[in-house]
Image (tube, rainbow, N blue to C red; front, top):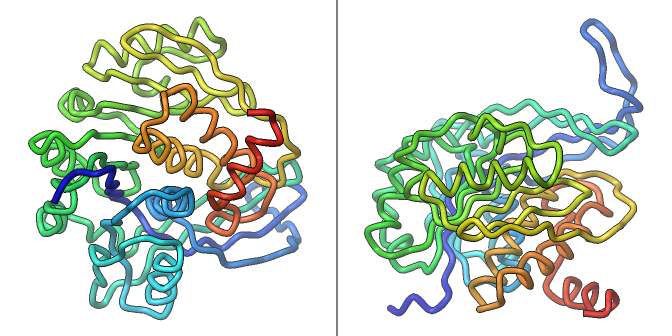
Length: 310
């Protein structure tokens, strides 16, 4: 089994319950919403779907509950060209749930119940260590237990599998884990939590990136929302602008970026081109509602880039 550009994703699976509101409710306030929908999400699954639709050869290590939702999500993931054999069904558990409010500006406010995601233990990771060992890259986020993320990073490191960490949701991380990461993709908030440096401009981003390089990470991509991405490799940084589009909602924009970026890298695209490819995928995603329903397919990304004169 060669490591011919295979991707392993380890992470969460959620059913997203999404409600559009004019504004987020204050404590004690009831706001009448519209356009209620249930869409499949979870950072791990979103990133897996983004990679699968963008053309990666991908296997997904995750857990669902033994409920109807879990089975429907598994079927959907298979349609998104993902190898779901490492997706475990957890007896007696419910599939993870996210309750998402989207306001009139397209911003979101989210509450999560881990459900079966909590069963993605280090022992579960070890059961699927072959998937990590055979992959060229392992992509992870932080909706799974931290000890499992660390266990997976250690297995990847032993087998020369590149480790990409999207450190979201924002939390403190040990230097032990960060030293095992090859590429990290925080947003401004996450970068500040990891480095103590508030990221308000390019100079701040460069400083935060240097702090992450000092922890042993070769490549740092700090996502700056509408301003694009600060890309820093071994201390050499530049901002790569995104594409201007009319955003409907930003759910899964970052996840789409991550999945598309690593897909492009595994295809051998230079890192700047991979960022532009990921920007294009994320730009398409924010023009559509929902998490996984908004994620574009490869033909759409290529067409978008052609329109931009790539």
